Amino acid sequence: MIIDGQTKVYGIFGYPVKHSKSPTFQTAAFQHLGINAVYVPFEVNPENLQKAVESLKILKISGVNITIPHKENVIQYVNEISEEVKIIKAANTVKNIDGYLVAYNTDWYGFIEGLKEINPDLENKKVLVIGAGGSSRAVVYGLLKENVDKIYISNRTVEKAIKLLNDYLEHFKIVDKIIKPIHLSEIPDIINDVDIIVNTTSIGLNDEDFPLFDYNFINPKHTVVDIIYKETKLLKVAKEKGCKYQNGYPMLIYQGAKSFEIWTNQKAPIEIMKKSIGLHF
Ligand code: ATR
Image 1 (tube, rainbow, N blue to C red):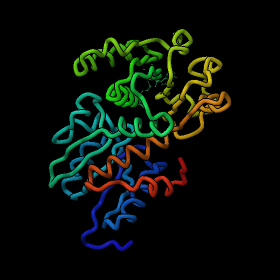
Image 2: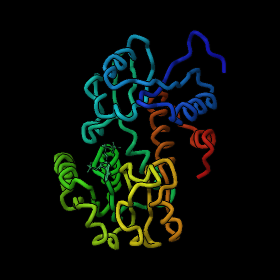
Image 3: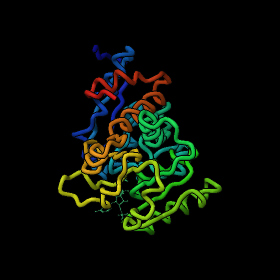
Image 4: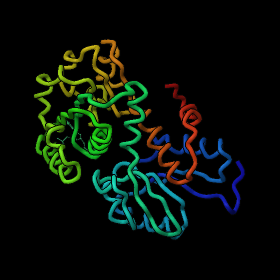
């Protein structure tokens, strides 16, 4: 790679950002296509987010991904937000168009494209989504776009799942017939009714985390997705039971691929991106 006076700069804002795999696979994509660009990690302390976003204009940084904990807060500092960001209320991608910053969300797309690798036809499926935070909002948005039949949103704090439903009612007309907010304790009552189970909470990140529900209720017909980047206890049980299952890496790759396409208007080299972080799926 030759860096010169015309090299474009892309990056990721996160806190922490040390463990991010985005610099590896985004750089691999630039190199593969011969694009004169680099992609670097920026550790942005939450109190400096506004300044960091303003610096994109001053330093003429072409685009950034936004990750935890900035996805919601970044919205107030850009010039324009795309339609999906208005609904999801979180952004993970910013494009700098000659000093005019536009924010997008590609997490929903990443989730759906990843899921389609193991479950291509989502129409009329019934889904249990665990969690009602920012990640859940993106996952639910994607599932609604795919015309699923039913989404149970199960959360420790059921009021947050109800709020998600009410927010989405403003944008998707018949969503009250599709989304049903439930408490975690109600999962056993509905689990036999669903085809797909998705964990969007951080439970499972640590091996000693208590289970979200009794995983003995999982049966081989379930497709199980955990958006955490490892084989969690939930996924281990899914594997043992013979289910189709997936961790968070496919979602990561596909959200990044969509960001890449937004920035460059070129098709992302998915296989190169996967290979660069040692993935084969
Ligand atoms: P993200 O943007 O990653 O979705 P978030 O918006 O902070 O993160 O949401 C975290 C989700 O994980 C929430 O659904 C949260 O449940 P509550 O709304 O009840 O807080 C869930 N979560 C976090 N810790 C949890 C725990 N110990 N048990 C159950 N759910 C938990």
